[in-house]
Length: 330
Image (tube, rainbow, N blue to C red; front, side):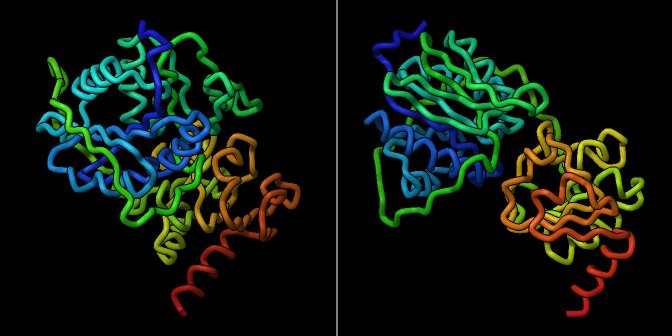
């Protein structure tokens, strides 16, 4: 176990994919900056990859005081074995007080392994973070199918680790010309037993839900998988993404990649159009922070109307195609 008294600083894992920093990285930097300032500590970003040294400038501009950068072919593409060994070695050497990552597929697969190696706990899939006067991280996450919010603490072990949902925090504005300390660390990937044979992208969503300014989502009310065609048509007119409720995903009408909600993705687009979605609390937890919400449902009593900026009670099979056609005619 790492000596608690020797630990200091807030770290965020700067996730990159195909050489591009992911949006959740900048959200974590904004929140990490807040936590580090409360602790009177430095904020560090940890970046793994190959040939990505220039990306460190973005991390400094968004609030990092230090960037630990490991460059190696084995780190160019995410590999759970390599990333686990590399991050655990850095934690044991530099001893951060807090370590945060996005609640992404990559982080979900290797952060628990890091936590085991350094003998600490991990609060996963969090939607809120704070730190008290004693430096104890208050990690807030939904529990009991989203019906309550639980605060998770790890008072005795360090680092205090948490993974955070995308869109849980706002990105900060970059500061032009801001710099910091770049620490180039040697590769320490150890034995790599996992081989990535192929990466397959879901071609049905050309725009990532996490990055989309507009999301058009379908629920059980659309009636079946074929009806997602007109949801996709409307999303395409907005150059947006297609979302879905859990009910639609569980019915097999669309892949889980599209699921928005407590057990899917948390999103915060500028515009969210909910089609045939009643508004179960689990779905609202994933999209309720959207800037503007339009709900289309034939049930005037649907809970989705309680949070909608515009509610349309009517036949979505007539309304959605008409809206698509109106956009095409602009």
